[in-house]
Length: 263
Image 1 (cartoon, rainbow, N blue to C red):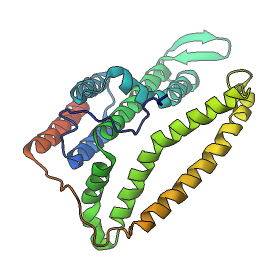
Image 2 (image 1 turned 180 degrees about the vertical axis):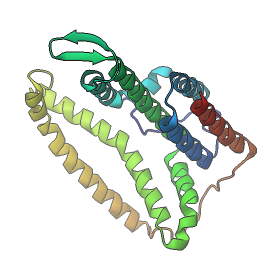
Image 3 (image 1 turned 30 degrees about the vertical axis):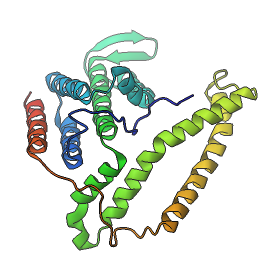
């Protein structure tokens, strides 16, 4: 039984986005992320949302699979929106029920924050789902290479980011296995209040943490036995090539951000 796709996992398929240079995708994602913090209108959010939908269609990732990428942050998005709706006292009073008050400003702010978080996670999911971990590490290292003159560990940072992204689906699958094993032994994770549910997760978190440290030790030993010494004397099997279509994608991302801010 295979585990579902998780945020940060690469989805191998032939598409226009998969064929782009990883540096172009990283810079385009960064531009959209910065633009999302500058956009403060409904029209701007609708424009960026339409662009994200088009990018998902161009990536040839099934919509159900892409929604699965966003599922881990659904609770955080809902909680953030509810906090703004129920605790903000800006604008006209729309609803009052006991001590619960919903104001127009809080509702608008909650919708904007929820949209911003979902779009940020969507762009990040597109980047990791359409870029192989090795290519992503090479792109990050190339973008940070000018800092090597200041003795900045660009290669080591890129390697750490790649390993972290690689471990996300691995730990998710391991957590599912542990949860099924504990449920087979009579553990119940769905009944009781929040405190009882949190205590029920301890039998999952403890072996998951131990397993993560064990995998980290095994990975370090494997890298050391294969002669890994950082960026010293290393070459690449595939060299990155920045082509015309990559430059066009960057220009399009900049235009979308500029148009979203103007709207």
